[in-house]
Amino acid sequence: MHVPNSIMQTILKTNQPNAVLTSNRFQNASHHLCDHILRTDFAGYWICKGPPNQPQTPTKLDKILVHVHGGGYVAGHPLGSVAQFLRVAELAAERNVKLGIFALHYSLGPQAKFPRQVEEAVAAYRYLVDELQIDPSNIILEGDSAGGHLVLSLLREIYEQCLKRPGGCILIYPWVNLTNSGASFQRNQFKDVLTKDGLDHAADQVLGPDGRFKFSHLCNFSTPCPK
Figure 1: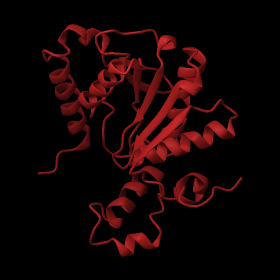
Figure 2: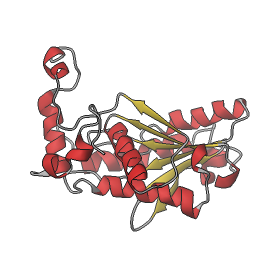
Figure 3: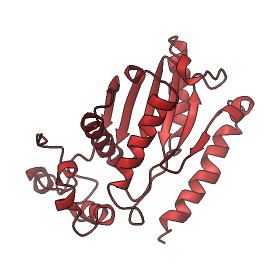
Figure 4: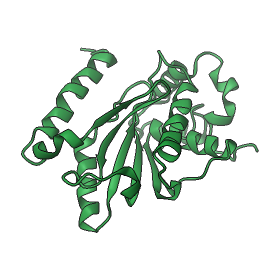
């Protein structure tokens, strides 16, 4: 049975985070966790601001991980890995690193078309740097799959807008080429979990009919970007 993405997001948002936050491990600190930030130009969650049981103000954090989830730009939720990220913050604290984790809640296709997601990512970055006065060198951008592509798009916009650069970047199996071209699609067609047809459909949903041409400078990061 096919469950609409909107229903899946509701199930995930209402059940999974609550199950984690009401657990014996985190229930005493739950009021500090998964703080929803909702602005007119972006949305996101402070999963934690330092160790889950010892929240800090953002400027006192040693590092801030900005998480951008995957899902082909048409699925996924920023709190999908909340338990894992809280554990990462705990492990960092054991090494005397106060780690804050902010998860971007970007708009999904097909309702939201590119480059709205990039604009939201830039607004969130400006919120951290300009409004909260966080040193960009302490910010680490992290994205998986489509989130990896959005991180790369954000880095390009940071360069284009002459913003201060973040201190690091982590890409986890990033979807670097929304045109889905390249010899590996043919070579690995019987090995890959995802199919070219599926990726093409997801790209069409978020880019729109002329998106590959209109946003060609952001579609394919597998080759050097034009200056």
